[in-house]
Image (tube, rainbow, N blue to C red; front, side, top):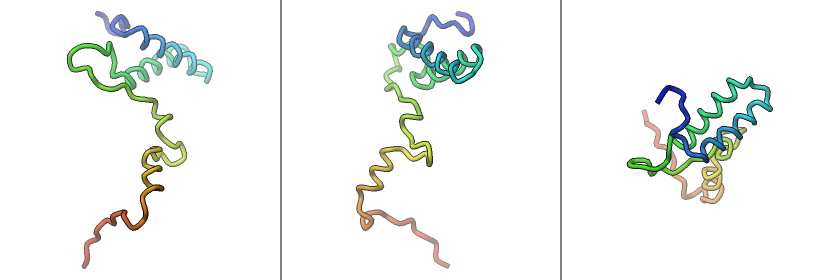
Length: 98
């Protein structure tokens, strides 16, 4: 298999890469840059290559933009925990006296 060969990717991964590439091209990236970024994104989400086989039981992630609030990079789960836990139950960081 030569470098850059996409035959080891599933059909779903190929569709994802095509959709992401089109999105980057709509934003003004060149064809070559868009394709490179698209495959990098697919690799990040699906851990590259086919998803079946020994040692490949990892869950497929989501895009970072879907998990974080763009203004302060706080995950939505952390925001929920912060607002639902009463202030009295939160622990304080100990400070060194002296």
